[in-house]
Image 1 (spheres, one colour):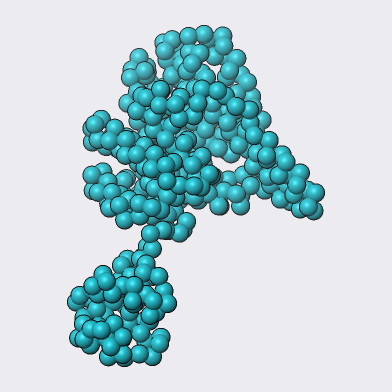
Image 2 (spheres, one colour):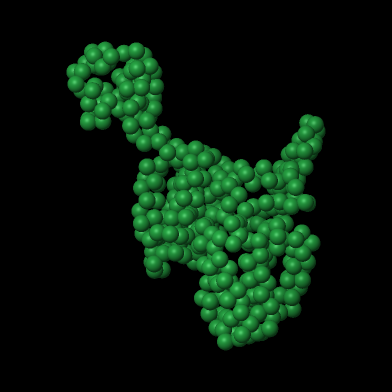
Length: 375
């Protein structure tokens, strides 16, 4: 990330042109001592001199100051993951203070603001109290609203709407979600199939294959991941719950989603356990918690998005993601949330004395403590 450092820029540009400090001072109309102080950082040029200096060196004022209001995608990715690690290792207030400084400095870098909103949403649960957690989510919403109002990047705006909507749900503001996305469910877009056909017609079947695989992968994850919410919605009807699980787990097994996308499957098993816990069904609750635990401790870390033998053309797509192929939260935070899912959920209080439940906690705790085993 670039910092304001006008002195070094003046030195470099002056030397590029083969000028002395006296030459530059005469052009600007100041003393040689003034130029010397600028170059050594003892003082800065008066603001009225900036247009003259930038014109003389044929660079923009931003370049003259060594400042860029934008960050590169690599900068943003690196910054995000560093801050995510900081949330796991440092006091939340300290990390939030740095986040605020970064946001103010790059307030017009909309891709960065989006990732800062994602960062706050992904770590609000680490706040010391509910009010602080709410403030983090509200800050994320504010960033999303700024991007929607100021950015003309349609793809960025689409991504922002998804993040803002999730924040509203976590803030228990359903009306805001409906206002944001509308209340009409629209058909899936058909541009993916057209794009694949276009690539094939253009003589690029490999690219057509990749496009179709990406579409199938996304639809598959959408189908299975929405089952978690659908299970909770139908929790009172165990016949429908069993139908949902039969179909969802059948699809998941067919595509080996435990290995392909364990995070999605952990959510499905956990939702199923909560549904049966609401019916005080000890054995079935424990069976799905066992599935949840198995996914959490088997090849989950180091977490990385990936394809498999069927989805064998999508890895380059993952590599281009804004945050890369890694998880949006640090491994420490993810592992702790896995354990909290069992020990901190009051729905499971009725089985906390069961030996099988205690064994699952022990299994997760052992995995949590063996931080380096899967590195």
